Length: 166
Image 1: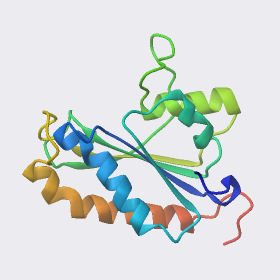
Image 2 (image 1 turned 90 degrees about the vertical axis):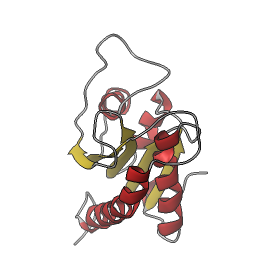
Image 3 (image 1 turned 180 degrees about the horizontal axis):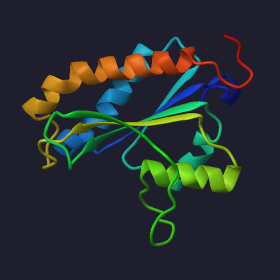
């Protein structure tokens, strides 16, 4: 159950399949973040196997979002941070899986609202074969990814948002 929407300032939105090796890093990091920020009502963590259109409503209600996923187009264990801008799907609305830019565009279209800050944090996958363990490269990069998530959340919470005073 989500916290009161007016208290949420930062949403961590992770995705991945825990049965596909390094693809499960998103849910693993989401569980870590839930534990790390359990006492902070300004942070909400959602983990899904895939990002779907229904998440646009949650995006419309937060000041900041951190999308967390693995990347198959990056070297194994490589950690990347990228700003995300809304971008409509190329060939019609996908109802099964959406990327971060498409989710933001849907939030803007349906709710006329976007988070002020949107970042995509990824870690390069070494293997997405069937299995429940991470590759050595992803295991080695987990501490860096955890520090990055924590630092990014703290930075987002320290920024002055609408209705907030510094």
